[in-house]
Image (tube, rainbow, N blue to C red):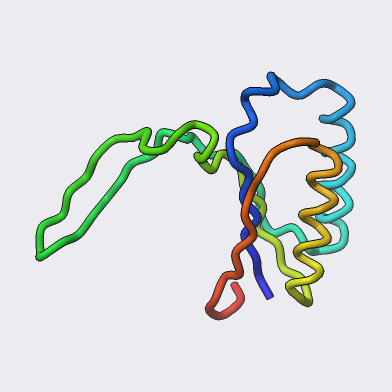
Length: 111
């Protein structure tokens, strides 16, 4: 099962300190060695909005949401169950501290 774990804007807390970066590096390394982590990265919260309605396509530059609602990071993981995805997300938040995010299952054939 593949899941997309997303983090929302954490900028209110300032830039991450060295301890957090070391702990996150260990966590990412562990998931990579276990074959669970497929991809990870940060996202520009401003993005581009595209809408198709009645045959007309509209493209608008962002930002579109409150900064605290913008998805700014992700990890694509492949695990055995939804519960395993939740446990990995809990470990992430134990390292990062306060914040919020989402976990979404990805449907379709594995890549």
